[in-house]
Image (cartoon, one colour):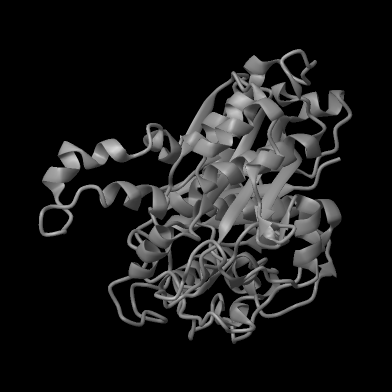
Length: 453
C-alpha cells in the first residue's frame, strides 16, 4: 500500500485574513476583502479595486514572520515571495512542526533531508519604481527611450540583485532557506492550476519515500500595474470604479452577465505530511489527500475564446480538460462522482471560462450538480491566479475539519445547473470535497480531499 498523505498545517493569506482561523471566520461571515487598492494609483485602470493582504491597516510584511537574522533578505523579496514566506511560517506553526526557522540548533520535527518544498508561482511583475529608475537613464538626445543607451549604460543602473528578486522560484528558494528544507524542491508555473499541481507533486514525492513532509501550495500577486495591465488585455478583470462601495457585487461566477473578476493576491501553503508520521507525533489532520489528477485544456489558453459572447455558443460548452482531470482524481481516490459532497471550482467570473467549467462539471456530475454545493471564493478574495487552487484546497480542508460550508456571495443569477447562488454558512456532512481548476496556461488540476480520523 502506498503511504497516505494528510494536511496538518494551513497557511492561508488573502484579503479576508492572514492565517486560516481569521480567513475561515471571514469566509463564514460572508465578508469580502475586495476594496480600494492602496499599493499604487489605479486612476488609469478600468478595474480600480482589488483584494490586498493586509494586517493592522497596512500591507502584510514578511519582516514580521522571519527570524531576526533574515530580515535583511526581505529587501530583495518581491511581493509574491513575501506572501509565500508568511504563508509557510503560518503553515509550519499551525502544524506544530519545528523547522530550522527556530534556529540552527533547534531540534527539528523531521530531518531536513526529509522536508520538501513545492510552491506554485506566477510571472512576477517588476516593481515600477525599480524598473523606471533605470529606464530614465537610457534616454537619447531627444529625450526618448533608446535601446542603444539601455544596452550601453541604462541596464547597469538596475539594482545589483534585481533579477534574483523576480525569478518565480524565489518563493520556494526563500522558504527552503528559512526552514532548512533539504528534500526535493520544485516550482510550478501553470497559473491557477499551479497550487494543486504542487500538492500533487508533494504527494507523489512522499509516496515514493523521498520526503516525510512538504511545504506545498501556491501564491501570486496580481495587484500591481504590470499584472493588472496584462490580465486586463486578456479579459480577466471587470470594470469597477474606485468609489464603488460594494465592488464584490461585480464579481458573479456562472452568471451570463459576468464580465470578469478583480485582481487579488495571496493563496495558501500547507504542510502535506505522511499520515503515519503525523499520527506518531500526535498531530491534528485537517483532511487526507485521497486523489489527484491533471490534464491539459484548450479552453483557458488565452483567457477568452474566439467568440465575443460565448455563453451557450456551440463548441464552448464543455472544458474537456477539467473533465479528464476530475475523473483522474476520482479514480485515484477510488470513488465515484456520486460520493463528492462539495466542490471548490475555479469560479473565475469570466463568461468564456465559466460556461466551459459548468459544462465540465455537468459532464462529471450530471443533473446531480444542482445538489452539490459549490464553494465559490472569487467574490471574496479576488482572482489570485497561481494562488487560487491552493487557497481553494486550504478552504476545502478547513471545511472538512469543521464539517461546515463557508458563506457564498453572489449578487446576480448563476447558472441554474449549479448550486452557487448567495448562501449563508451552514453545517454539512462532508466526507469528500473536490477542488479543481483550469488555468490561463491551459493546465488543469484536481484534488479530492476526505475526512480523516
